Length: 148
Image (cartoon, rainbow, N blue to C red; front, side, top):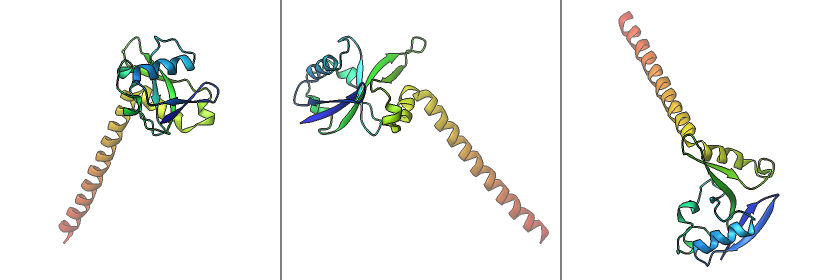
């Protein structure tokens, strides 16, 4: 049971899932030449973050979180000094050229509040358009009934 982690300049490394998460994350950081105190996470191809940061000291098996034979992108987890919100930075260099689909996924991950605001505004616009269309149909029906 293994996964492939993408990072650096198009580097790929295979990691064994048959180990404790605490050992998995430590080995991941060492292999990728990261500081052991640095917060990292993994993102799958659908844009889901595996939340390794919260589980990095867990004695559960890595296979309980990660799916075997999958590809994951290594992410650095940063905190915004002002808001305390998480920000994800890809540790896969030039991902916008080699994996353009990741650009949008990372933007959404790093700005979840903006994404929620955008979705809410979109829903309100849709409701407003629907309400206007209903009113104009009702107005046209009323006009026809008054003419008769």
